[in-house]
Image 1 (cartoon, rainbow, N blue to C red):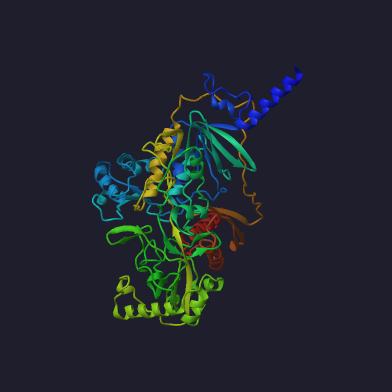
Image 2: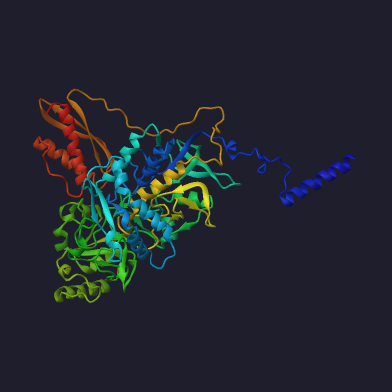
Length: 628
């Protein structure tokens, strides 16, 4: 008998190995009426709503959810002081329109959509109806002196009703983001912010597909944080993920113009819970720019096109753009519309030949800095290797690795266009046709850059993330550039408008009490775990030292001013998050000027005006405390 039992047990074990069948008792009966997924998770904290990403969309969603009465956790991947995503560095203009003009606005947006199937009309209408409230909402959270002006980027019917909003007339100063951030800070009793705390996964019930919370990485730990009513993904795009750029944009490489922490995290998390993706191949770009090796982003918005608020206009000097074969491939005098150019009546993303270079001569070098933050005559940038110098075209071609004969012919043909005042290749604006004739000659490599990517999880008009079958994933929402509604050509100010519009829609809907889940606590008997992050060390002041504060484009700026016998002896900038290689160039220059002239009435540094003014104001603040 014993022998028979052993034989039967052996057969069972063999069958278990072959079939994968297990006799283990399930942890939970999913069909039981007593089943609650919430009790199966070891939670480390609970909130009503979790918002992932502290950019414009995340800030807006948090504000709206808090105003609906929700307890909100706002997660941010970046260190404190470097939050803000693209919103902090964008132009700060927000799309809007009169509520009575939604029909015309819809006609315009359908033209922007072109022959693409998405977004459907309902989403466009929902977006524009809410955009009609943008000015009123911004005013309600503290924005003052909002200026509105007509702005349609394309000559399509209905475009005449599109407006842009600017707070206090400030562009590229971070004013919109500061307004949103101040509104978040005023709601600190309802909104808790965690820095250095990236979301690394969503917690989903495998039976109902409901998203119950977020896995958060902090200080070497992964914490399970519950959201009773909703999770809102606001993590932006994948501008800093080179593999995703290759996979989805079909570019060998590309770089952000601003945000450094947008690496597609929200897209991956949404995919893991079954989200459908849309618009993954669309981006606000490419433009061609020089890469800032200190940040991994480009130096500014653009050099292509004539000088404007967006472009330095350097490409309209004695300059041409060439591709891998040493020939021109575009009209240097035209700045693409967020990367799109008019191609025989259709708008397409600007074709690129990579590697690409800007080639120019001595006249162009002396005409202006390539970027406003660069040195006079671009001398320092030549020394740093950003600009390559050669005494002849042959030598320059060899240094940058292009065919010398092609490059010489290209320059010869281009110089003839300059003489004839007619570019028969690309129809460059005649007034910008300036010959490349004076040695030495220069080149700098240009890389594809973009304001942002537009792809991500598909959302509906309620801000709900949809699965691959078009059904909402319960309790999961999104806002902003993560899964933007723009499928084809992009209307400037539209993404910031979208951050405010869908931030409000998703934040409000996420805050609604959900009765398909437990509303009571699912925490086991323990205290919630709080995140930790690096805080600044306290500054110990000596006699005659005073701290002054203001805000730059990168957030708070603090200076320490040493005053002796009513004289400014020294100024140290003790805290800032301004962009390396760009705004930070102003720090030494401005502080040196103040000390030398013994006054804060000094010139700002071109290309770093916001940083310069913040330093000046911070010094004034310190001097006020010193009684000067």
